[in-house]
Image (cartoon, rainbow, N blue to C red; front, side, top):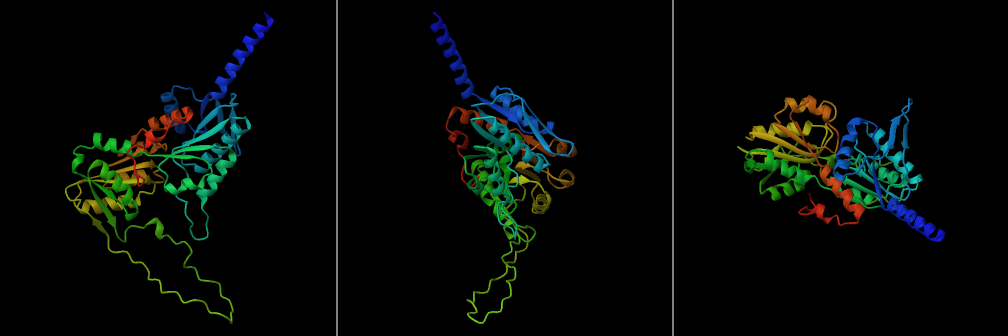
Length: 372
């Protein structure tokens, strides 16, 4: 009888251990209340409670993370929304990942809707590819998987030594266009530079709309920035071979500003992945107004809207700026009523659920092209 009782007790204990090991928890690595809103929306959709943890800044600005519950053998999802203080948010994520790793968590998956430093993914002059450095730091801290949204360059996924799911916000923004923009059939999708033409083409094809591209000297493409290749070589006194004579490189000269495509009497919808420094967008809106567009919308995934961006938008010819909630921007919305928000917590929650259950992620990418 005693053996039966012991066996049943051990069986129940083993069952509880298996449940614990196969479970998952969702934590937020933010120390600011504005940044935990997305995490709360995601956990509400999943029907789980946010993990118990404390993230705060010491008086000397050091970041401290205390995990208040056992995570042994569990899959942990860390939701990290990046506020204006980017470097603090990165340290919060790294320290929480390391704390969970040293607490014997089975898998640590970062949910980082806007991946910071993603614009620094190419060599500039004698700088460095900071995005690659950050990828290495996240792996070292203990992350085993990342869920993000609309990376600035898709090749960034190659910086990581673990899986990266690069979700897309375009279905939500396209739905907003169809439901919230009256007479959107009279619209035209606009790329504010030739570099953004592929993304704009993807939107135009799915909405069955025309495409226009702004090109000319007013645009400063990211690829045109100085990268050090024209630096003078070191002077050496050589008496041997003088080297090969390469063909003369012709300097680039941009043509006058022009709009390729007819926007007269149309609604212009400019699409991009990030809207931060709004100078290019304001200039593009002025050009489109001059060419006869009667309404101008901007659709972007990540609304960083730094510095005086809200004021510039309010004073510009732009009628509406639509961004997702990958980055908190409630303060900017109070300063500028033209800013509207689309909620993407649904797709982030579904990605978490599918990864935990070992289901295919292909459903989240249906009708999504490589160029999107």
